[in-house]
Image (cartoon, rainbow, N blue to C red; front, side):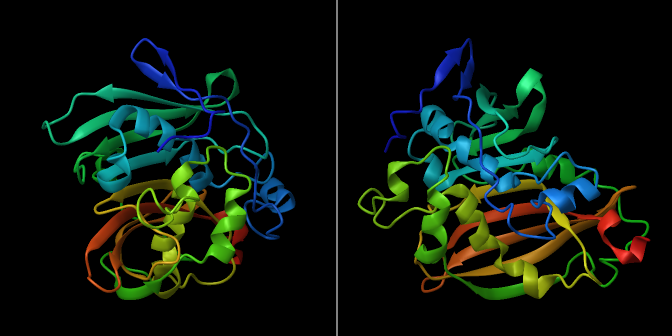
Length: 294
């Protein structure tokens, strides 16, 4: 499986670098969201932001170059977002192998840079199974408990939901491929893995189905991704395949501008029950968007 010919991995010493891309803000028409220019400007951003999961799209070719096809089965990508980008802003993905604890589990440092070298996101990648010392799992160990939650006042650490049906429909996923920065053959060709593979930004949606039953924030709000970790346990995640997902709140925190929730979602095959993937997601609810913080 290879990326399109337009993708060329370059070596700079020990660092792998992908090409500079200009991701499209595919959700800018979602009025009232952080991707909408008017809403984002009101909240202090330069414009509607490109969703963090879209930035995941530039890393799979680098993962293949480092770890091979196995990354799609037992690999992971753990990213903490540092700087929001806007529509068409140039960004470039990088990866470098780092020390691994065992011969089975291999690791890499990963990051993305914008113009002038500003870091858009940073974290770790791996292959060979769940990494207990991934970038986000390490950050979770030092999360400060919340002191004042208003939008998330009804939520508690340890809250769970289970067996939430999940299926990625082609009618929803195919349009997302039209603007993807790095299309892989497996996103279209079912013969490579036996079924069509979901691109990372779409695969993440399969695990996000736990949000609606697990979170019921008070009042209107605007949210944005703060971090995402996608770990394949028995991947890939396929389009038009029946799954179920379990969810659990791992931590609740706050900052001067946000209320934050960290949650974990595990995706399982609906028939056999095998674990396919696990995700950790940090969601930031912006205080400036809530009447509870007027």
